[in-house]
Image 1 (tube, rainbow, N blue to C red):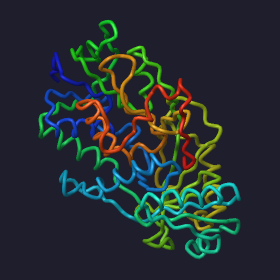
Image 2 (cartoon, rainbow, N blue to C red):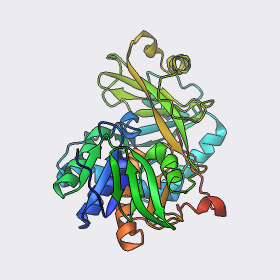
Image 3 (tube, rainbow, N blue to C red):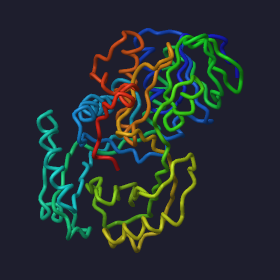
Length: 384
């Protein structure tokens, strides 16, 4: 593999953020772009290990606006990029089992409706009527949006990579950034396991590893990697084809169709930060027990597969976009489990910021790195 000596921009991270940014920068006419991915295949880091969910249902205006821009980009993906991404609009059904969540759900639906998103507020009886296979005697309320759904992560990443390569982007898998050399407060070189690349611009799109990349440039990024794991079942013929993406909100327990079976996951509230992507078998049993309690037919299913991936969690569960205190070092990370669905618009936003000095498609200027030291946090409630 021939590593170039120089580049106009080096993008670190070949998941959805880096791939989308590479494509949108090239689309704007930027030349000599190098995309680095440390894994042997693109999109096999955090993006490739996510559940593939996409939704409009968030609790803050900025996250809803990101979805309003990003999800239609996924709908148009095949027409614009030439890659089918299997967007299945099964809808997300979030279920509240305590009054606090029920009250917040009502507020969230009002916010979403005011922004033009057609989320519906359901009563507990309506939740039970929609989910006859599940035991939700304690459901107080629910929210449902029929345009939420599931997308194939690998197809999105490879669609962007392929389209970017056609425009001249050099996308290199199996190349790991090992250091960043500065000249004063300016970027000078990205060092890799195969040598150095002289550049004045670096985009850190390394997901859960973005903090490590930031440290190479002397930039402290307040995000922590947290393991999230899930498993799939064999065929469960009782599950209807229109079964939605169901989230038992208080338990952070979720179910959606995967082939003829189900994909099931749950957040471990006691998970310690780290880069471990091995499945915790003990916690998987807890997840299974909780799943059977909510959906008894799961008891007769067998496990088809299981895996773990990483969230990149910021203190307010919102991403970080834009500049840092090092000239030429840009950041697009910290999506706290929502990165895949916001990847398309985020790559476009970073192309705008790097080339124009401002965000045009969505004003995400409040989601800058400085907000943490300045106390301008914007908290997202709908984190699963």
